[in-house]
Length: 573
Image (tube, one colour):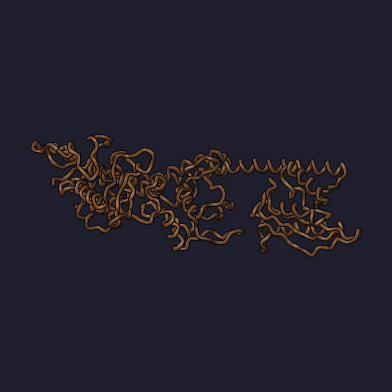
């Protein structure tokens, strides 16, 4: 906030009263507020110069206006506007500025301010430039206003050019978001500004991303979680540390800076020099959850259900929402298509919650793998992992020798540069090439350290969800059921009281593809074609006759979703 200092005013009584003056002090940015005091050295230096100038004029300073961290390229400055509004009432004889660049950085604004100040009966004074109402004084003021405007625009162009170069090089522009710190380091004797992960706030920000990626939390719940964990904004000269708001949390979850992307002037550079705080997979999942929440599926509600966000209408494909209605006889819970709330009405009716829960339980029996399928998947993945690890180890041996060659090349290149045989452009180009090859070589060496046992352990954890999936699902708590559904399916399409189709997760699709490909290679003449939905051989009357409910039935086939069949092997009942 601008600082305004009041001093005792001399009463206006006689014509021989002492002249009075007001002082305006300004710095452009908070970076100039350096020093032991809050105002910094620049403001204190301007005040001393203005006081000496007032003594030379024989004037008494009756009011002081301080504007810390405000640009002079416009007149929308609180302290400046306050001074203009009070000048006529104070009847000050002088308005003293340190120099004319403190008045304004735009030539039109400088001329407008001169007219406003003189319109109150005061005279504009500068401690460095001599300005008066003579033609020469007005000419000097006009020339200096044009010079200040030219310098401001020229400096702005230079700054923009430097920021453009920094952006192309992957440097962060401006203040780093919460979870990072703007620091300085020394490289080859030069001090440069860098962005590093905040050891205090960084883990909390990562926790917020990982929690929201599960789909179990809303923006409000994430905000409360961060508040309870002690996450606060950084202390600034103007703002004290405070908890994040919902808007700040949403902005944080949408910021690509956390995955290493620099955004500036509408452009994006994915090769930021700062270390990513969030993985690309987690960030993509968070954006999907945010998009789903915008469509109305995961908004904060008083009543929740573990199936919300996983169910979609089998007729129109829109999301199904949870309703709890109080009526005669008690409270009724339903799942209804979101399209029924809009202008275009979907023909799907509301379904009772217990019917949908039972349908999802039945569908889990379809995705389970047999013992033979599990053996096939284990053998296939283990064989592939052994091949990959063997390849990685061969490549790592080769790249270890390559790392030694790169180190010798770099030493030779630096030796030629110090002797003046290589210019800076060639040095920078070769350094980038060596850095790229070294990164690739280190990656192969890192891959070689992985063992087949790690892959088998991860596979077993995944296959546990596909082993007796229906039994495991029925015995799970509602919260665990929600996690299982999110792990196995991206979407469950509900039609009437049954799950008609499902969109499995990518890893589930790949596992079933491995099992089906092995079965296709196994000759079995006794095996008959089975219907993917019913799990039984032969005719399926359930596909011809619709189930009758409380509401009138619709013509057969009307509005049915033509979704592709899934690669699920359904077990016989």
